[in-house]
Image: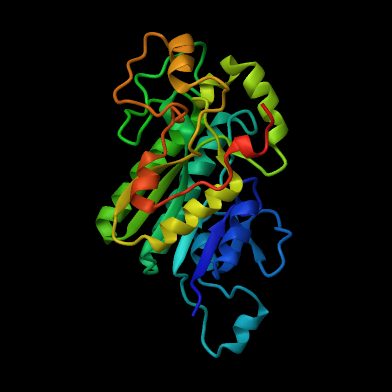
Length: 297
């Protein structure tokens, strides 16, 4: 029997590419969002995840009308993937961004754990590393950015993601379940590679993203690998592609733009400063969509 997955925020920029990838892997998916997803075979249940009652109810509902033919009441899913959020600052006021992101994540994790779900994956963010939405010029503390880095954002969005990681860790310990937080880089959709011309021409504009990115389809593969990898408890994984988004080698870029930032281990010639080494080594992630396949240098 195929695994049943509830995906929150599947109508968003990342989810609308990750969900087809999960369908291709044989999962049955229900989308929880405030807007419908135009994806054949996937129902969207309109759900306000900041409401704990709606969240609990949504995690115990039929995926579609065919569920009524099964002869039993809806049961909890095999896995929950929580991507729903206000996706950055300057969309809603800061207090609403913080409230929506923190409360929706708390409600989803709490409901899933209390319903007996053993695998939960949440969307964290590169913004936890503190530079993306920093006020003024701010350097990273060291390179590469790996999961043991001391996160220190000053914005409402990045702060909400740090809090969500702490929430996930607490519930994973309390309930003995697997909760994996993905620190997702700048998401690039399949039709978004024209942006790389600017990235290459003006590399200084990419410092806030640590010159890194994640193809939305490769993000779907990371989610798939997380669903299949059991027994890790609480974990954080950088969800980014392999290589830096510049023509120049990584060492040259870091010397040019971050000359005073220490490098704590040898980096590959074009390794992304926001490193996915942990995802490659533990999850077995292998990128399919390196930007150089789509951009002529």
